Amino acid sequence: MADQSEAVATAPPRAPASGALQIAVLAALASTGTLATNIMLPSLPQMAISLNVTSAAVTSAITIYLAAFAFGQLLVGPLSDRYGRRWPILVGFAVFFAGSVWCGLASDLPNLLIGRVLQALGACATSVLSRAIARDLFNGAALGRAMALIMIAMSAAPGFSPLLGGALDHTFGWRSEFALVAVFAVIGAIAHGIVLGETHHSVRTPLDPFAIIRAYISLIGDRRFAVPAATVSLTIGGLFSMFSASPRIVIEALQFTPIQLGLFFAGTVLIVFAAGMLATKLAARHGLKRSIHAGLWATAAGSLGILLVSLFSPTFLPYLCAMSMFLLGMGIVSPLGTAQALSPFGEKAGAASALLGFWQMLNAAVGVWLAATVSHEAMFALGVVLTIFSLAALGLYALKPGAG
Image 1 (cartoon, rainbow, N blue to C red):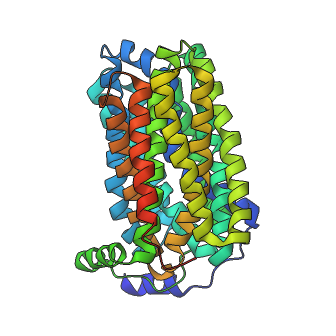
Image 2 (cartoon, one colour; image 1 turned 90 degrees about the vertical axis):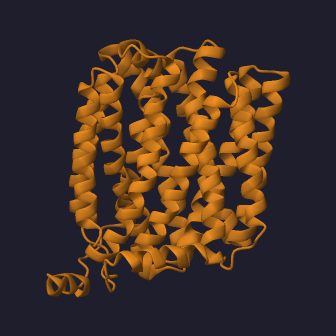
């Protein structure tokens, strides 16, 4: 078995597909996890009614998903460094498919939560390995550009999916949303096999639990990884807090319909698209560090703006402006910070990507929980969470990572 593994590790790579096609497939892999959550956001009130639980209780379907997503990545990354990217991704899609079907057939909240855990364990493989594959295929400035383009492309799925989810909920009911993401898993697995295949052709890292723990400890202790990774994780935690709180803000407080909520989320795609385009230009002209600093100041300004809006003018337009500023900063920080964190660690890109993903989803789970519990006023709670996270990220990045 070891001989076979070494043969795979030293096998010559196949002829690559075009960069644009590779990035499109990587975006699909990366967006699987957020697609599974964002598509159901407009349906949370209807799901609560259908399953005979409260709106707060059904929000646990998001929190438990993010928690399972976080911890699952810690195993997936080292597995991919030992056995390659191909099989962990294909198995991940299969588990995600099974979890989606389970959710679609759930008749009560416990069964929905079981399905959500399965979805998360499958999606974490595709998400974490999309970053590792990007590191396999690209280096340096090219990796930064690739990560920005992947973010631009993948923002379409979670951005437009609430609009699609609202339409599906209105026409066929909320269970049809899980049917759609199951089909997405099948298509994603086929696309990965055709376009990417195996990309990990360097020396394989032994699957030794103690070696894995040492690898994670060494990454945590390396400022080149820890500072940008923690910074990105806090901004992503804020993003998921915004996703989870927006249905309560927009539908319950501002009296929007589920379709209007979908349009609201679709509009965020344009902001993230602009941020991704701006990120590549800023990085080329000013370098990663200064560009990330600029993005962090934008997230802090937007977060404080949402907090102030909640206190003095809790209406839609001011909220939209402040949220747009946060999203603009997040869209700059996330791809550039990810590239900065992964660039020095090609030989253990899977472990580095897994630890980065773990921190991101753990912060997301904490952020979602805080946004639901800090206050019964959803906009105020979101403002508090975003302000804490963005100021913490700004302070952390002042520790100055060593690369970029």
